[in-house]
Length: 233
Ligand code: NDP
Image (cartoon, rainbow, N blue to C red; front, side, top):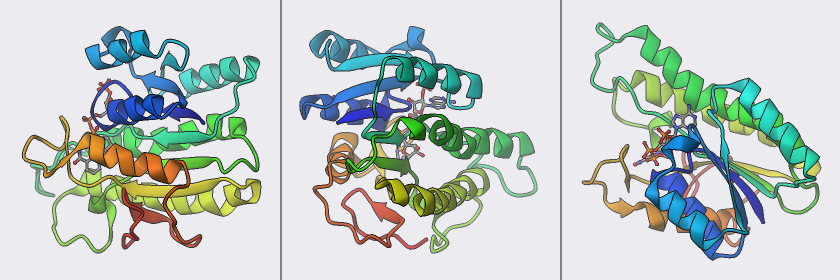
């Protein structure tokens, strides 16, 4: 498979990149700033030279997405998977009374408009009828069934990402492309913190199994966890 992964420099994105390479796939690993390439990504670049292409992509910059997509098209690149992994978590400490509205806008810019921009420019490169996938990394925080309050920017952005996933699924299935929103579990990353119960590598394993079509998921499902279990929208 040829996979495009956003936010590939650290956290879940880095683990997805590493595992995809180990499983023999090729990866276009997108980073907000290539100059910030982490040691982990540079080590992978040294080890998997012919399978890894590192590209700059701030998912909020549509011009960057358009330019990268045009370069990939020129190179006749066909994608078998897009993993919208890049995400931010801001403003959780605020109450509605103190919430800075610019944190809402910033969060929606990255967590919602980012995946929309990526899908807009890269879905034309998806291979038709080859079991291609778009996986939007969401969160249980975006579920209407979540039982906690106050998480306005993040929770609302992931709910919207789930709706985007449903809308995209309704159109891309005609091309044989699967679309899912995936809750990766609470994982040890900069975002998840070190008290999280799961390693990012374990979650990445489940997500890669889904990308490879190894996990059976009913056609009607839109939102699942990293094991393929249905999540309430
Ligand atoms: P991290 O904070 O560890 O990493 C976030 C990644 O997103 C970084 O690579 C970061 O790049 C990238 N990123 C942020 N903004 C942009 C941008 N504008 N353009 C491109 N890349 C950007 O988070 P995780 O690895 O934990 O999270 C990955 C995904 O999983 C997110 O979508 C998150 O919401 C979701 N998730 C995580 C959970 C957890 O427990 N960790 C739980 C549920 C969902 P840079 O290094 O440049 O900042």
